[in-house]
Image (cartoon, rainbow, N blue to C red):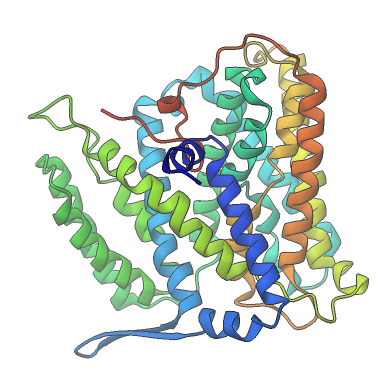
Length: 409
């Protein structure tokens, strides 16, 4: 394959989702092949970092989930800050409908899961797993329809995903925190005023922020609060504008620099390390267990109901209008794509159960629910999006991970 074709592929809207899917498929193939021992040896390989008496000893799987995924959440935080200040979240009129849909799209799947696991305290730990949406996959499926997709439909899906990520961050902070270390929390708290001071002084060099951010991450890792949240906190202090050079945005520059690393490096590695499901001994009874079935039905049934019902109600009541150039069936197709919960669902599953329970594998439900949602969503949209000359998002306006590159300034 020539370099020009490779560059063309990575410029595609769907590239991030395709790479992510290939990494997941590869993990499943390897985990069910004679290479499975090597796969397990890789994800459980011990990695130790020690400075004096301070030590972080984790296996490769935890370094990926707690370390590299902190970079992913850092990028998400940068995107959220930009969206709130100058993007989709800065216009109240544009955020009402996606916000309502995101709330419904997180609540309904959790209720479906809860209903199927009521009375099982251990299983109920996973209630938030089907509440997440994987925007890289969802946009990847949407992009398969080409430029027939109305611009407003893409913006609507991305906006829902932004609020979905905000909800996921809040859930992780409130519900998936272990026993707290007050000393480590104190160290983390001390980092915040220094970051605030750097921001107020309009320090635009990124090195001081990243050095303090590294200390913040290590303290959060030891505190019992999930370390990835350090990435979100750090992102909120990165300055959007440079007072000395209005044309330069430190935040957007950093977002742009991180994009390919996260979309084509960190997320596929995360998928490879977490999607290696061994199907040996798997039977229908395991799939029908309340946890995987609750996740699958939560993603496929709960997500679509949680998104489309609020849309129908508020539009029929005259409170808001559908996005320009769209109809109810197209919005329904998007509600199905919201049921693709792969990356964040896998991440929350790891937090909820701390590993793979003996009697069932939550990842079966995540993959099944996401797969069905993606296929049905694509078919519904294909049947309801006609050939038309719709304006499409310019590459630099597709402002979400796995969609395209962030704005360049």
